[in-house]
Each structure stands twice: as structure tokens, then as C-alpha cells.
Image (tube, rainbow, N blue to C red; front, top):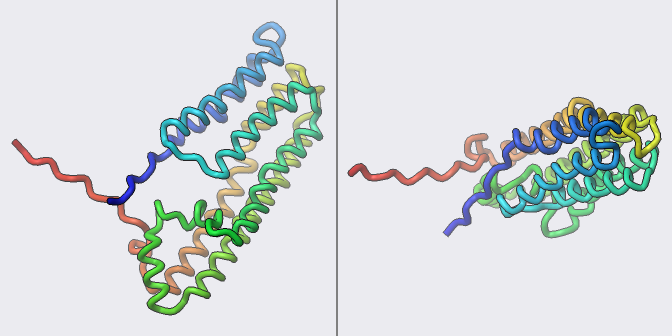
Length: 240
């Protein structure tokens, strides 16, 4: 019996709890006359942390990337509460995607490369059909080379993200840590990370996925609709 596919993450909830609410709290509610810098920071970080726990309990799914993201939020709170300045935040912001980028390459030596989780995912791609076609055509070694190239592109996207993270943090975080002004700058950085960092990184990941799919088509002879996994049909209900 096939295992049911995990629930898909709600992108709207993700954006609201991880971007919108923390940004509003940091930039608007952290003034001394309202929540104050420390309480404002704690409240702002409580939303992505709470969402991460809820999403794990709801979908029963955690992976390396989500764990790193969860730890990153904890580090943000810890650094701010210790009054670490902009340089410390810039290093932290660059370190997280750098660790992921290096892990993508190192995982190629393991039985579960991260590229198979992020791009060559059995929830999206019919891995069994692709593997069968590769074996029939004798192109397994060429496919392994294709996965290696996709991993390099994927890793590069995270390293570019690291550089952009560092630059954005150094540009925005100017005020002393532990102040309402610093919280506002942190909120602005949090908000701008999507257009400045996430979108370019996602574009590079999409390019890596396109290269991977194009290679799979060439090596297997399968069309895209055969490469992608077809969702199971819902059982028809009998009319009374």
C-alpha cells in the first residue's frame, strides 16, 4: 500500500507568520511606548517559531532545511538579546545559507543527497519510472553526472544567497542592538529578504530544476508529463 503524500505547506500562512507579522511587530510595535525592544523582539520571533512547531505537528514532516531555518530564528533572538551588533547578524545571515550550500555538496557522498529532497523529489517526480527508463537505456552514469551538476547549481544558489544576506545586513543594521531602531532595521531586513534574496535564489533553483528536467528527458526519452508524478485519482462515490 502506497504511503500517502504529506500535506502541502500553506504558502500564505508561511508568508504571514514568517514575514508579515514579525516585520510589523519589529517595525511598529517595538517602540518604548508600546512593547519595547526586548518584548517586541520576543513577540516577533514567537510567530515564526510557533508556526514552525505547528507546521511540523500538522504535516508530520521535518527536513534539514526546515531545521536549519528553525535554528536560524533562535540564533536571531539569541544574538539580539545579547546585544550583538550588525556585523554579528551579518555573519549569522551569511552562515546559514553557506552551511546549506556546503551540505548540498557533501550530501552527494551519502545515500540521501539533498538534491533528491529539493529537486529530484519523489513527491513531484515519478522516480521509479525515471529509474526504470535510465536502466533500460543504460544511462545511469550520465544521470549521476547530471545530478552532480544540479547539486553544484543548487549549492551555488545558496552561496549567492549568503553573499546577498551579508550585504543586506551590513547595509541596513546600523543602530545599536537592543534598541527600537535596531528592531525596526531588523524588521526591514526581514521584509526585504524576499525581493532581494529569496527571488534571485529561487530563480537559480528553478534554472537548476530546468537543467535537471531537460537532462532527464534526453537520457530517458520520457516527456515531461511522464516524468512528473501523477496524483492518485480520488475514489468515485457511488450515488444512492
